Amino acid sequence: MSDKFDVIVIGAGPAGYVAAIRAAQLGLKTACIDAFVGKDGKQALGGTCLNVGCIPSKALLDSSKQYYNLSHNLPAHGISVENAKMDMATFIGRKDKIVKQFTGGIGQLFKANKVTPFFGKGKLLGCKTGDSKNVEITSNGGSKQTISATNVILASGSVPIELPFAKFDNKFILDNAGALDISEVPQRLGVIGAGVIGLELGSVWNRLGSQVTILEALPDFLAVADQDVAKVAKKEFEKQGLTIKLSAKLTKAEVKTTSNKSSEVALTYEDKDGTHELTVDKLLVAVGRRAYTEGLLADDTGVKLDERGRIAVDEHNHTGVDGVWAIGDAVRGPMLAHKGSEEGVAVAEWIAGKAGHINLDTVPWVIYTEPEIAWAGKTEKELKDAGVPYKIGTFPFAAIGRAVAMNEAIGQVKVLAHAETDRLLGVHMVGPGVSELIAECVVAMEFKGSAEDLARIVHAHPTLSEAVHEAALSVDKRAIHKGN
Image: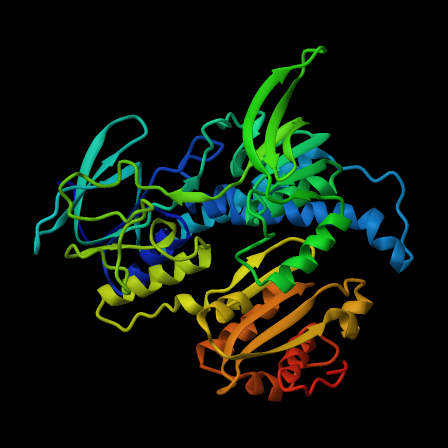
């Protein structure tokens, strides 16, 4: 036994590294184990989010947006640029530099907070009530060591779902990581799944000139979002050049060599009109993610998995095994980095005997496309299905002076409030900067606020946030700048 800790965290993604830092802040001797390897072959803290997810995708989205603006948006401002070019090495290199900055930053935070990092794969060994929990660490070279702690937090994250007939090679058939490292713009890009990853990365390569076709098996576009918002978003994405096919189920994907000895991916998919063929140069498979628990648990830990392979936990993220907790993508709830981080904070505080808190009902969702999509709380369909009486207020960005001045006057804010109590039940947005605007609504919902509360708060003029103000006023047909 090399060392004894108060807390061991397995996984250094947004859930795990935040849990480790908060535990250390609370005076608990803390270790954090992670096996992610960066491009340089060294340990890269931060998990999927910082290495091949949230951060690198936003870097590429921002770079591609700047490029797209040169020819599509700047002319409206009287700015003309001829023969703009994208240097792909710089494009990808900038992303890699940002990733390295943030993963290295976590290492510095660990050092500053006295968190002990271990490089390898962690496995929780058999547990007995009241005993210290032992965790085996297997290095990438195969050597093993065991450390122990009073509490173990499982934060193993998630991995992309792979289709049996479209295996990832990250050369032609790509997962999210592969789609972040394409060395040249593909003429034709296929995307399977019109979710967050498919839409964001599809948008990146569409802006750079790819002909992007998205196949979505479900009949509704963005079924998880409010459909009024989803319809606006779909229309705008199609205007930008994305081809989106709904009720389109992929049945076959085969990499073939062409007559000029290059390779392409031949797809077969089915929809209501029958069977169709589609040929692309690259295929991004983005049909979702699943909890990653392979090798995480010894057979006799007592920790249980649910029917979807996630670690079963209660409302306090406890597994039911004394001293064993689980957070992030590996447990129930939305697979969102900020949700995992807040669970990490809450669990560390519960372990320390404090009042941790996480409310899954007010976790905001964001899709960083153009226009952006954001929401928190219930959709109109969810309220209707549950028989909850509600009222609606909406307001378009087309009537917001700041949005028009920015030449980004697309989309709307939709507020759902209880018909009897006026309590905010959900807020849904599509438009410019809504990834930031949603925070105001989350605060109001967390404090059990009403639509009237939002309506009575003074919002600066001219700002995009005025759309939230007017939508809240619209709930009671009091919007000033539109007919009610």
